[in-house]
Length: 164
Length: 164
DNA sequence: CTCATATATCTTGACGTCAAGATAAACCGA
DNA sequence: TCGGTTTATCTTGACGTCAAGATATATGAG
Image (cartoon, rainbow over all chains, first blue to last red; front, side, top):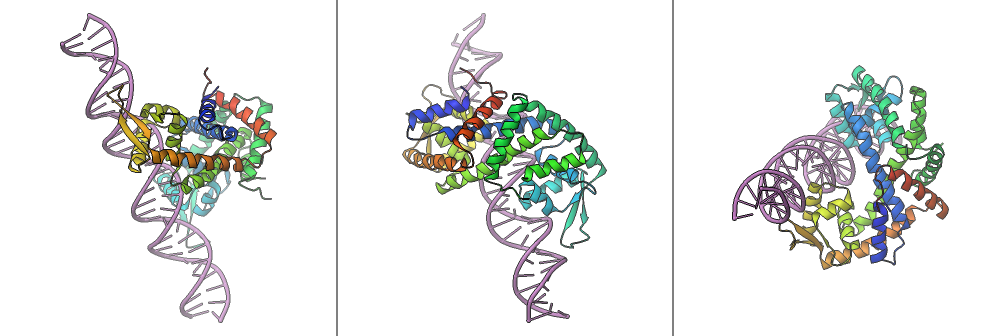
């Protein structure tokens, strides 16, 4: 009997006409996301980052050399709007973790590149981050994790059709 | 090969020392939450609500008669801070969907009560909401939904221990 | 009865986000 | 070459949220 069960019981008492089984599953996804977010924020904060700045630095890092992408590329990878990305880049630039260089191939735009400090910071942070994610999966066995991931892949495919 | 797989492939190429399987699962939870949130927002907007206002009205509605809770009770049910709840109540009060009545049992506080308009609105909205959630689960079979819910219950219990 | 402490709620200031629109440069057909 | 269209990026204004602290009332030990 967790908090979600208590909510469903209330609905069943007040609105017995509704089938709230799916509400429970979706509610648990929401609550898990909140808890996972808090857990990840702690690791980011230990490196002077937050989820937004980690997201950008990690995207640049895993893109490989020369660790530089246009703001549009970053928007495509990160599920945020262009206005949000402008803010994120502004903050990271002030912190000396990225640089804006004129895009030699398109005079309308820039490329955002990791600085040396940015590279060192994200490389250390992502190691801690992965260890932390591993700890947060502890309630599930290896087999359960595989089963869960398979179900999430199938569900997510209904919203973000896989390509290629 | 979905977007999460592409991200994991990048990490495996750039940082083969990291085991990123858990990152994939957690990333999928995040992306699902974003997609589910967008889907739910559309239904809320159709009733002139957003996720924040729906959350409060639904909590009051499912509490049963007299559809009134203290701000503290609302905070306990909704995973937000007291400051956030004050803002939410302010907006709902301006919209005429809830009322603040002095709490006869505790002069420090109030009870927040659904108005007639608030009751009618949330009762209609929640019916649409449940139907919408059902549609968003369409990618999974009934059996898969049960399996998924079971796994989420177990995982979430690691963060929010069940009581009673 | 009184005062120290606990509790309930609200206020303030800072973020991160989005939608919509502004700006500027590239591209392309005629 | 030139002007219209497309694209890349940034700006603006409005929200929702949180952390920390302020305010007001209740409670209880003496």
